[in-house]
Amino acid sequence: MVAARITVNGKEAPISPAAPHTTVLDFLRDRGLTGTKEGCAEGECGACSVLVARPGTNKPTDWVAVNACLVPVAALDGQEIVTSEGLATAGEAGTPPTLHPVQEEMAVRGGSQCGYCTPGFVCSMAAEYYRPDRCAHAEADGDTDAEADGTDPEHGPNGFDLHALSGNLCRCTGYRPIRDAAFAVGAPAEEDPLAQRREQSPPEPVATEYARDGSAFLRPGTLAEALQVLRERPEAVVVAGSTDWGVEVNIRSRRASCVVAIDRLAEMRELRVESGHIEIGAALTLTEIERRLDGEVPLLAELFPQFASRLIRNSATIGGNLGTGSPIGDSPPVLLALEASVVLADADGERVVPLAEYFTGYRQSVRRPGELIRAVSIPLPLSPVTGFHKIAKRRFDDISSVAVAFALDIEDGVVRKARIGLGGVAATPIRALATEAALQGRPWSAETVEAAARVMRGEGTPMGDHRASSLYRSAMLGQSLRKLHAQTTEAVSS
Picture 1 (cartoon, rainbow, N blue to C red):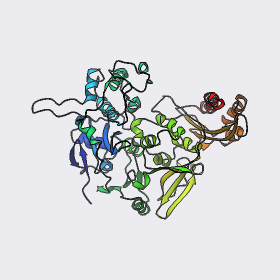
Picture 2 (cartoon, rainbow, N blue to C red):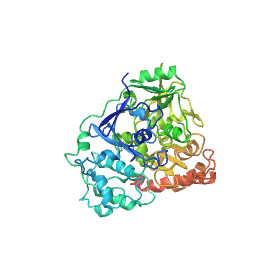
Picture 3 (tube, one colour):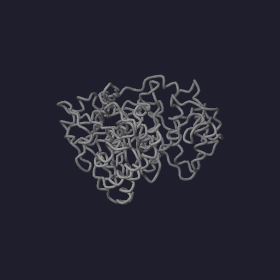
Picture 4 (cartoon, rainbow, N blue to C red):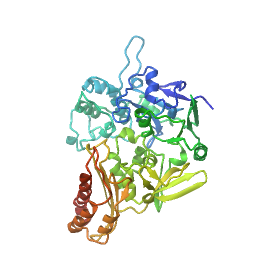
């Protein structure tokens, strides 16, 4: 087995002697790359953002921003990353480096004050700067309001998507100058080495067996090998994007004797659209799914911008969100409304379980020891009337108090079929079966909706906590159905 190594800012470095649980953040800082900061250690502030070379959607390679505080450095064995220090171009002896265009705009437009969060903003901004399909809508000068150029407030005239910065927090500069910098950057120059790098394939995943001090990080080469490892080592912790496990390591100081990474397994990274269903590999990140589906599943397209932040979506996987079994995960309500099934695999074969039968209790499921979620299957055709409502304290980058997903078939003004997924109102994500029954076969009218809303208030067993009271959660269920009716009545009748 080749020694674990990582390429940082163009230079290869051994991962040893870092412990298997060491994060990319700590690894970089130990090497003197202190632009990468720790703010929250939970993936919520973005001060630790770095760029990773990943398989691209429109080009061979995408530069993807990730939270270095969550990812074990062993998970990037054989991979290539760029930090804020690596964006600038080194000058001649005795001269300062030339700032990257993103760094230059942040400087001249006052996008930095104390500077603690700035390197993370710069890396997240650079990932969007290099996004191949970013297209300018007008000449960007950084002083023009997006609305004036016919775009929305979250997309600049240069095509910059502000959601790229949704995982980065600043507490002293204020966001307007940062937005100005984002909306001022142009297109990468042809001679830009990071732009040219997109034309070459990213490093291939390598099988990893990294062990120190009695603990190990393993990256099997195939799904069959991974399933065999899990059979032999049932105590192993399975990770993909590490957005959940990384928090456990940082905040709760949890350690594992064995961690098995499955995020780069080819068998779990396929997305197939077939005549009867869409199959989504469980190890695809949410960003990859969003860009590859490109709106083909409208309910998922509505979910993605509300799921955590772009930094988290760049690492988090749909299999991981289901595998944690959290009752407040955002994808389960949507997948329940879509009547999705999970494909479970172990060393003996596969089985398909409807998601409505998957959850058995708080963070519990029918998944057996040694089984992995290999894929999620969504049946076709899709219901034409859909909606996803996330009730939270913040508009973006927040945990749901209540999440509601709708998928309705309405013909001639009558609800022929209703599927409603709920999160945050029970020990598990659930279907609103009583509300579905109250809608099906009835006119899609204010009277029907009002009666069904009263039924919906009684779905689940909502509890009160620091995010919302039980009464508030129940009230929001009924309001969500009324909101859907208000949003869709015109579309259904036209």
